[in-house]
Image 1 (cartoon, rainbow, N blue to C red):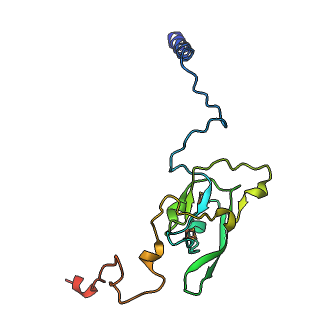
Image 2: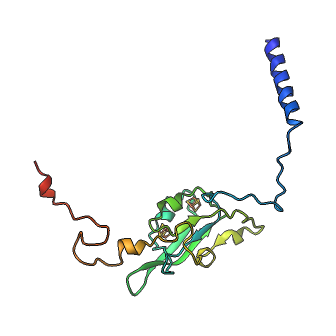
Image 3: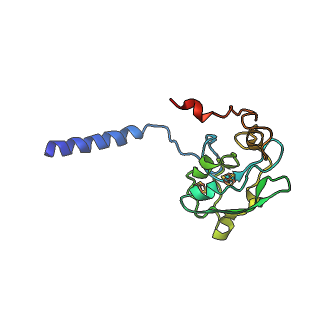
Length: 175
Ligand code: SF4
Ligand code: SF4
């Protein structure tokens, strides 16, 4: 028992001794800022599609999946039938940056960025409205356009839309 304790003590001192000769790894933040990976999860944005339209269709999926219920919005509809959020709000004071909203979003509208310097003294300043969230670019996926795939309205018969397969005749599956 005594021998094991002594060995543990010596191993601890050896580790400490080894670190005495290592180059320090201190980074002088904020003078030096490390480049974070593109998939870092911090400040959230709402992106636009390649046509410049806002991608969000106010489907409420992000709001439903958010574990801390910090996303709220109200849906509205344009003349051409396209949905959009009349207002969209994220309370960053509650957000845990889990990324679930981004995973759930069918239009790639909501995206987490690597911008993490968002601290505020006044907690109410952490409530972001749509004007604060909406950017003028497509974020991580510039080319994706949900409406080019899904369409605002059905054009033609089933199975004739771009990238859509012909409907299956259920009776053909019968034995
Ligand atoms: S990152 Fe997580 S906690 Fe933050 S808004 Fe999205 S789902 Fe909610
Ligand atoms: S951000 Fe995405 S998931 Fe959230 S309401 Fe808009 S389209 Fe739906």
